[in-house]
Length: 271
Ligand SMILES: [Zn+2]
Image (cartoon, rainbow, N blue to C red; front, side):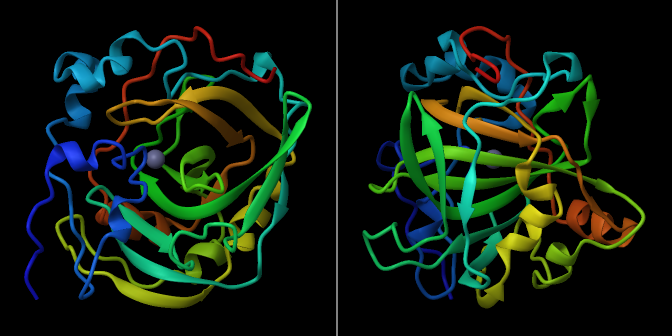
């Protein structure tokens, strides 16, 4: 299997996301097309100077990630209600920085994906779980503590645009995680193959953080160029604990993928 021709950066700019987003769905023959990135996490403080299209990374008022604190309290607004099926199918791969999965859905129809509803400005909004991926170390800190990894459940609107990210902090604890026990063997960060998987239960991840019953939420952005805003972020107060072995298995296939923390500005934390 050979790599497909590299798609031009311009074409991918709107898809390259936060989070790896949807570009990875453009794949055939079980080989992933990776966009050529002109940015690096190690230099995330300067993304805004790389290209005019990345200006928001420097000037945005709702950039992610931000430091969160216990004394900010937890949110009583925007409470998420989940309608996730027991089993989902999709493609499992490495997004270049860690494990990832894109969920299967009919072409151009996102509304069959697991859904989540929340209140935004007095209106019920529904979004759909399109993919998940892992960063290491964590993007968000709480009380200056940074977890070893952070998992992002990326939700899109009915048109497929990224809208909500559920963030799970992942750290070693006393017992294995059921959710991570059921993901297949990982591929490494330089492996571009993907495999189809059936029967992943995304509810298990929610269960392991008490269904996001306690959380922070804020208005934020994609955490990689072009740093587009208009996202709503949720960070669970509960940490998703894994065994030492599971933690090592995750870290083994991750590369450094945390953006520098941003200044709090127009984020309206928990409001
Ligand atoms: Zn992410």
